[in-house]
Length: 95
Image 1 (cartoon, helix red, strand yellow):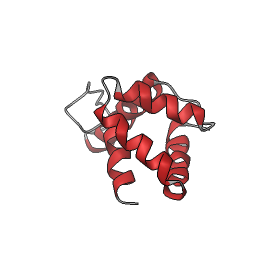
Image 2 (image 1 turned 90 degrees about the vertical axis):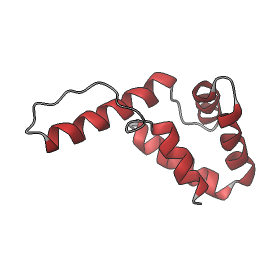
Image 3 (image 1 turned 60 degrees about the vertical axis):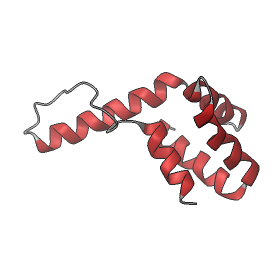
């Protein structure tokens, strides 16, 4: 199972568990939000690391850039476009 599937599963679990949803939201106020987020995911049977989340965002962003720029794009991070954690939080807010 890849990180995208695990994030979708975590989102689904949170949609049915208000306490889990609240815990995930509270990670935004943490000194180490990604680390705490991953700890909660692991506790819920979805093994992921901070690097998994960062890497997923970077890979997704690079795929988009390659598809729109003739296939030769391998850009580094740019602002928020690849922030899987922020995207997850936006999706969580909507449920």
